Length: 84
Image (tube, rainbow, N blue to C red; front, side):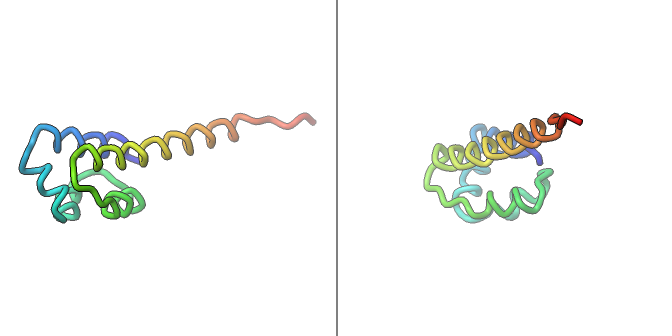
């Protein structure tokens, strides 16, 4: 999981009009290649269909929040101890 990579991608799109245009116009595969994303994250990012940076960022945030929830639940499950 690379929440940092996902956040970097959105941050770069905010500060670079060229990068933002690429993210929105179908060049995502080329632009995310150097990010530290696992195959599942890459697939999720490539599946995003957005017309604006705000729409794209909202979808990336949805991915991040789902990962955080999954990680949090996994940590709670590992912490359970059954009485003997």
